[in-house]
Image (cartoon, rainbow, N blue to C red; front, side, top):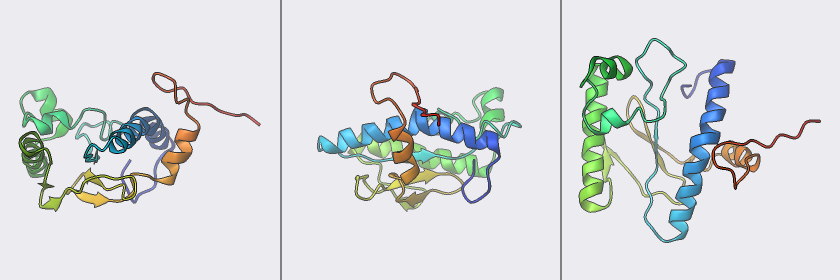
Length: 164
């Protein structure tokens, strides 16, 4: 699902499920780490898969070959992420950011964009897509609504639904 364009029903379902399964969990971890005084940086990998199946989108763990510079290591990976100048540039940017984080404890910038530290007040999140941008929507109201319908003690996703 791409920002700024209407979503098909299936895309909307997968976006909601993805947020319920991954984004809410990441939100809880960010809050817990920040509450403990640890520095926190947040990102959302939104670069879509190059595969012919548009439903795959920016799927879970798609950023891993970008981080390790292995986007074209195998034919399957090359087909999944694509072999373009944008892919190579994003991969170089992620390698630099993750290397800086490992070396200095902070990712610094990515692709010429400063990567600010996350806080509950700012919600600053770097969106990694066709060019990294910083958004301050880490605490989007829809996430708060979604989280209110999730069982906080559940392992995985168990959605509480009240039928009327």
